[in-house]
Length: 208
Image (tube, rainbow, N blue to C red; front, top):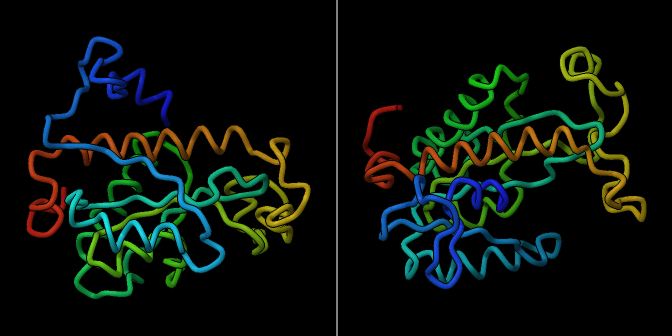
């Protein structure tokens, strides 16, 4: 994603813009790229950020990316209807719809994750009222035969057999799936970031 940002002219360092600046965001709009710590211990990193920085940084939306290169994975979009706060469901569905549209625009196969899939760092943002979308490929659950017929891979085998195992190394990365999910996520972020008033659109605007 960071390489794509630099190519688009969005990556800045010390006030200098790389590239021709064609995709530069307005001064009042910023994208925060964050890697959370201690998710498995109770969403420690993301909860701290959500509780202390959402207000000061005026965070209006979040996209959570959790396991997007599973070796036997399936391209999936988090189902916003399972958000823990009813008020965040409609704006989160707009983010979900955009992610799904990016798959359709690329003529790629994907599926909507089951309900109750907000079980990662996205939960921290939803709890403080920030609309959230998510991408994932799956971990220990088994790929079904119908999923294999659409997405390939091995049926009745885990999406990621090395999840939390010593074999979870760079050799375990599904590079083609990583590229697909990164492209979908980046394009969705770019679309949302260029909205004139993203917060107004999420909460009160039209569907697209």
